Amino acid sequence: MKTTIELPDQLAKQIKAYAAERGLSMREVHERALRSLLTAPQGSSSGFRLKTITTDGKGIQVADGWPSIRSMIYPDTAE
Image (cartoon, rainbow, N blue to C red; front, side, top):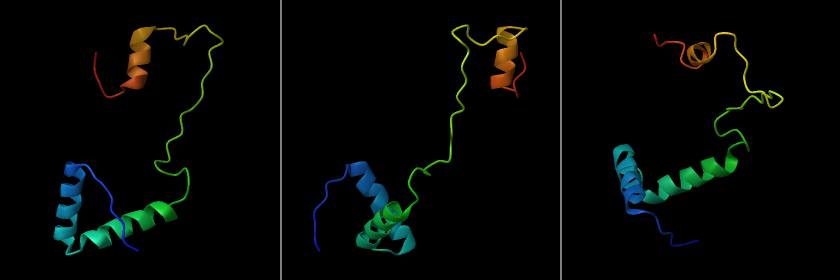
């Protein structure tokens, strides 16, 4: 089946470069990408799950305040 798709110029350039680097046709790149998308497990795009935390409307309570919270968020930075 033949079809026409419109792509942003930058994306088309990236696809063309990808195809050229690998010796593939544009058709092969499009077909592989679509097959990959359609066969990928649903909901597993990144594997990231945000942990739900509730504070009963009181916010996060930490004895040392903001410096302690900041060190938990950015453990590898010095103050």
